Amino acid sequence: MNQEKDEKLRENGQIILENNRADYRILLLSIIGEIEGHEAAPNQSKATQYDHVLPRLAAFEDDDELEGLLVLLNTQGGDVDAGLAIAEMIATLSKPTVSLVLGGSHSIGVPLAVSTNYSFIVESGTVLVHPVRMGGTVIGAPQSFAYFKRVQDRITRFIARHSHTTKEDLEQMMMDNTELTKDLGTILVGKEAVEAGIIDEVGGISRALEHLKAMIESGK
Image (tube, rainbow, N blue to C red; front, side, top):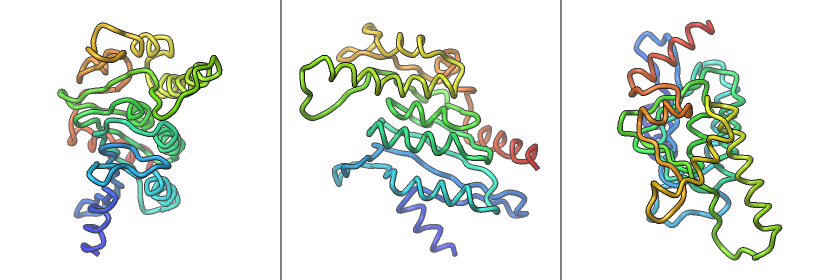
C-alpha cells in the first residue's frame, strides 16, 4: 500500500492524508508548474496534466471514505480551458475543500486558488492577475479581440463568483501598466492578495489543515 502511495505521489502529486486514529481522510492534490492542456508541455518542464486531475476529482467525490480536499498551488498558469475545467470541478465538489498558495498561483492559477471553499496564501506567496495571452497565429480582425474579451470574461466572472473581489476590480488589476516592466497586470504578495479580496487568509500548511479538519467536523 505504501508503494502505491509513493507511486501516486511521484506521478501525479496526489496522496491521502490520514492521522493515526483515522478520524479523517484527506486527499492532497498538488498543482505545480504549467497547467497542461490539449498539448503536452516540453519534457523538461514541470506540469500538471488536467486529464489526470479531473478523473481523480471525480473519484474523490464518489469515495465515501475521503472527507476533504487540500489543494497545494505553485503554478505559473498555463492552458485556460484546462485550468478552468479543474477549477469548475473543484468548485462543484460536495465535500469540504481548502487551497494553499505556496510560491505562486499566477494567471489561470488564480481561479484554481479561489475554487475551494476557503483559501490560504503564505506570507511570501504571490498571485499574478494579467490579461489573457494567446500563442500561435492570431487573425488581426475585430472578431479576434471579441473572442479574447469573452475568454477573459469567463475568468473574471469565475474569480469574482468565488472570492470577495469584483469583476470590475479584477479588470483594473489586469490592465495596470505600472507594476510589471514588460507586461500588464498586478502581482499581489501574501497579505495584499487577502486585502484585495482574492484570497481568504494568510497562513501555512498547519492553518490550512486545521481549517479543513474543522470544516469536516462541522459537516459531521
